[in-house]
Image (cartoon, rainbow, N blue to C red; front, side):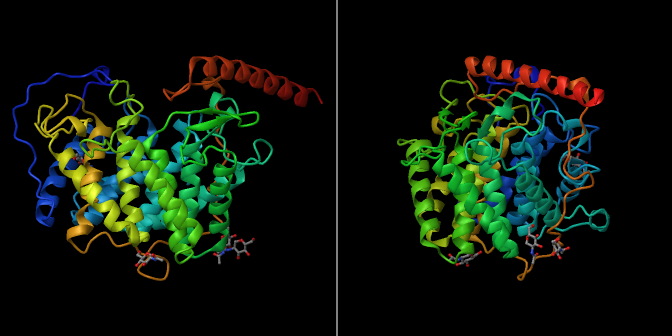
Length: 465
Ligand SMILES: *[C@@H]1O[C@H](CO)[C@@H](O)[C@H](O)[C@H]1NC(C)=O
Ligand SMILES: *[C@@H]1O[C@H](CO)[C@@H](O)[C@H](O)[C@H]1NC(C)=O
Ligand SMILES: *[C@@H]1O[C@H](CO)[C@@H](O)[C@H](O)[C@H]1NC(C)=O
Ligand SMILES: *[C@@H]1O[C@H](CO)[C@@H](O)[C@H](O)[C@H]1NC(C)=O
């Protein structure tokens, strides 16, 4: 893939198509394997740039996407048995987990939000549930997948903020970042999903309590409205003002968490109602009525997706498939839709110099739409590989009593107790390319400035006394 970064970010590349589309017979496991093999290689070649075995973030992509991609590759191994990227996953994981064993590497210390950490943590619960092999080094370092997920869980539970909006996690971890004044759906939705999957895996009720608490808070504060319109988040001070945009990954993460809780409660009626309502809203919102294609409605038609957003469909597909596994009654409803999308996505994979880069718009095929990148490639990979359990006995999930191999450490907090390494040269704040309106940005910047000043005064005050 190797897209020059300047050409990314919503700019449409017009390339002539030379190669034939990737062949995919959706009823054949061999065919799914060969199609995903080509797509995964294309993804890996764009991710691990020449000379960089670690997968260091390269513009325009942020660190969180690397955790998300590693998660997709873990699932690739689980669905196909192909081990060729396993070493990449281990090396990338050990780097991401950082010396402090809390998924807060130093170089991310100022820009990392709860959602960034959450995407990596979801990758590690995924590796835990798939029994992805751990190396001796990794175990010796206490960088096992389960214990790091538990560490993030402990740190994020410690950041739960009852003082405003009756609860919730703030988007940002550092008070000096503007998103500290925003309680967004994805940070809370990943925390909810992580709690629910830890509950399912370990059977520890403490995690289930956190899952219930965080989900009910999202509903009470109306980030998830009564009609299951799921907003992007709510603003401090009182969470009465919302960013109304709808993104597929927000629906996906809540769906997966509800499914894990459904399983944990052995078919609990409350969680079934939530699953059914979120699924109905997901189909109505993101599934194109005409083609059946999943569409990122907020940015796809208008060609305004940033570098993050083309990957969101990957997580919706991954978490719908997860739902079909832990809430099997949804299987016959979910799987035909994913299979349809697998075919539509595969039909776009004729782009780039290799002729196997996949496009963004699955609803305008069968052709490459000229838009490619790591997110587009990951989305095609996930939607195709996740149909494998439909035709082959693959993709089983283990738990602590049934096939689990990762060591539990419920009291983990990392080596610095979750505190970010504050390095003032990065002050005062950084805005990410999220869906924050200009007015919000200006307002948040002013409040950020006030916080910075108050902090500075506070520090002086402390020094004087
Ligand atoms: C990771 O993948 C790339 C691209 O496929 C490959 O060139 C590289 O050697 C791999 N690195 C590791 C550590 O396995
Ligand atoms: C929980 O998940 C397992 C598969 O992982 C499945 O066999 C079982 O039926 C699920 N439980 C319920 C209540 O659906
Ligand atoms: C359950 O999780 C909590 C919170 O992390 C922990 O304090 C407790 O020790 C765990 N219990 C078991 C039996 O692992
Ligand atoms: C975790 O901490 C709790 C409370 O301090 C303690 O009771 C428990 O034994 C610890 N669990 C482990 C596995 O260390």
